[in-house]
Image 1 (spheres, helix red, strand yellow):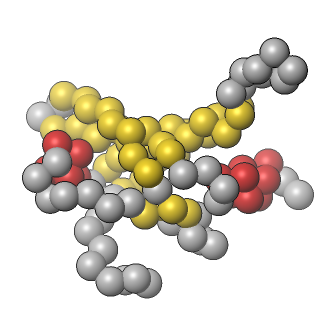
Image 2: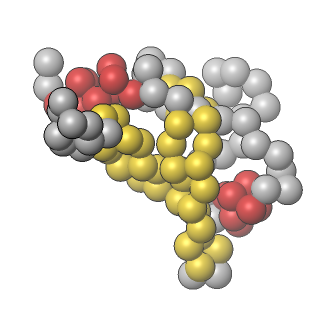
Length: 95
């Protein structure tokens, strides 16, 4: 299994990410609960009036950070992934 496939498999069991958006050259970061489908598309529910939703309506380019493994005494290392892409409003599944 290559590294990308391994990350995809692990990310399916994770439910929290940080989403970065920007508007007028001003970055914004928020924490969201999300779901990843089999094609590694990420989905989340948000109100249209939220800052990140407003930013996405004006600039669809986003970045996400997902913590896969946090440093512990027993396993002293951190694993994460970052993703860049475009976000869009989805009204119905598979749209």
